Image (tube, rainbow, N blue to C red; front, side, top):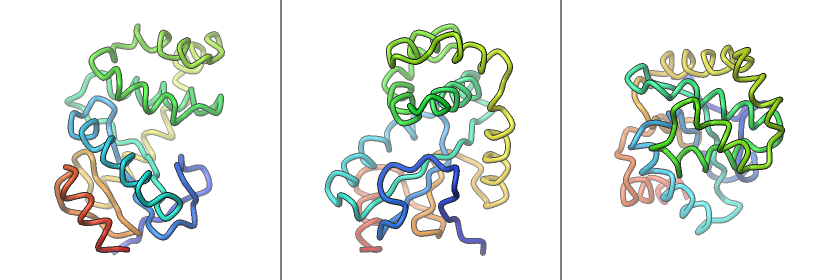
Length: 170
């Protein structure tokens, strides 16, 4: 089985050499990803530098705004604000239609013209497609799909299950 490891251009929250690395293949419109987000944040707060979170894209076809939201996250990343946009997209999950995305960018203080141009030209589409194809090759067809220290996590995305899984690795 292929191990999932941090790559140079990944979005990493925490130290890349942390004891526990959780790679999430997610979808910004997925309610289960939104449910897992506070648990992941709490785990990182609890264990500090021992945990690193990595986010990769797996926008699902059933979510009509997921692709545009992923592209918005990457456009924000090109301005150094991936995690801020990541959090904003989940916090405003009910407001993901593409017309709303520039408002989120504005709220983050992004260069609006640059953001809009990157969305209009679909500059980040290939990166997102590559990550989604990789997820599917690893057997991740739904979201969120987690890999903890390179191994596929098969459990639920609720607080109790994710906490127990992380504690097994510590």
